[in-house]
Length: 98
Image (cartoon, rainbow, N blue to C red; front, side, top):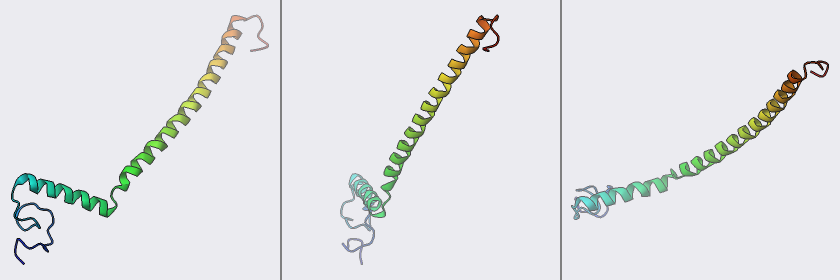
């Protein structure tokens, strides 16, 4: 095979030896290399990483929501107890309810 054969294995288009060896312009080489990388990513199934990232965002949002809800419950319980203690301190004469 020669450098200009269509059946050559190098499809990157990065200069000599590629399928389109007649196009020596750097922009064409970059375009072909970029398209080849994208093509290989699609063929390899590597695009599942985006779905995985979305799943992690959803899981993180659920965890944050749960933490916020539990924090609100604890905060209201603490404020209620603090109010009871404040009322108890204000009425020092009636210590049986404290």
